[in-house]
Length: 464
Image (cartoon, one colour):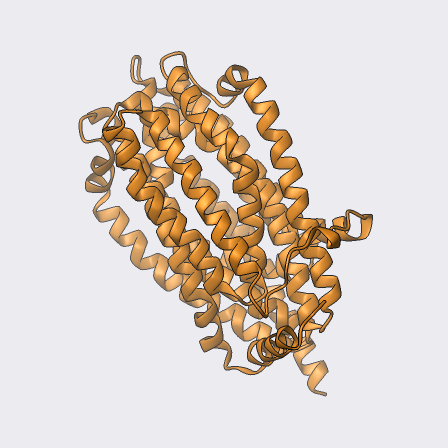
């Protein structure tokens, strides 16, 4: 039952999202999200740095486990983005009952699937580690790290659902508090569990488990505040209609993150194949370190894009297409500018950045520097591809959103990964991700131009 306070809060939020100046509104939505994404990325960097003080094998083991964490993100984003985008459009159309049923359906579906994945993963732990690309020298550390991540699977998946539901209904500050608090706690727990308690790589995973549970509690508290769409089990509606709507908004994320998971596994295996003899762990660890650095840089752009999404969803649902177009172009421009700055810094200081994680391993540094510079060379192009994909996903254009989601990892990266190293060996493997980003931009640009023209046409029609 909605209280008068809930109704008043939602009406005020509707007016803000559909009437406030667009650029200021995007920044207002983006700042909390950027902060939460950056703090989470800092946690990932700190986690890798602490583990790097143990051994190269431990660093590689965490990189192996990252593939399973992308699987968690795939399911969490599928239900989080799918339900959250629907909630934003429903609130824009002033349909609160639909929004509440969708919130419960997305949340409890993620909990059920996460529990099933955790049980199956624990039963088949050793085959799972080998499937993810663990070599014999790093398999023991990978097993110790992964068992805690498996236990945390339903918590992590449902955290992602709550975070995206809060963010997409315009309550980015609550989503930020939940993620940031858990990430900060993790940064403090890492050295305590790894070095003080002497748990080694298991300590890093245990710290992740504890911090994720803490975030879960805070996000649940944020969900229950007045003005937000509450999650209640009685609203759980696992019907074809709601799952179809979840798929409309979440399928692009599922495909994208699923392919990232597959690509990470293939990259780990390729690194072991093309590495110099005896340097397999160092090469795998180098790619893992670069992925953490790029994740930190990309978190800023992802935060801006996620600030754009609720503005896009509300105004698209309200039929205010001129505001959607203005928000989209602003998101692209700001993202590209920031990416240019970060790419230049990453290219210039790549040796120092890689050495920060494990300066004791010269092979890791040599490989990591080249991989990082290849990615920085094309990094500014990601702003347009990210914003365009988020626009199609938020507005329910499932075919285009899914196509753009899979093109980077599926259409380009995997074929490049299998072909280029055959001719150029390890140097070719280092360049694969940069080549994939360039091809993705070329493929996405016509879609971006088409989206801007279509929004302009709809705005002109509405005005007429």
